Image (cartoon, rainbow, N blue to C red):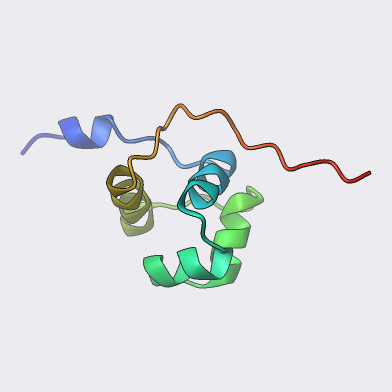
Amino acid sequence: MSNQGKANRPQWDSQRILTLRHHLGLTQRQLAERLGTRQQTISEWETGMYKPHGASSTLLSIIAERAQFEYNTAPIKEPKKP
């Protein structure tokens, strides 16, 4: 078996997860439901407290690939409040 497919997959950092979630138009709760995890886990990933590993990382990659998510997408900047 080859690890070639795995080599092309991104490391899921907090900004990439947030950008993917926005690309999908999902709330943290909705993404958590798709991944079979808790909303708090998504929040912890997005704040950089933890990083997804193993099956969670693989599922994020599969969801991203199916959604045609561009891994090199510029980070989404939250609008500044006046």
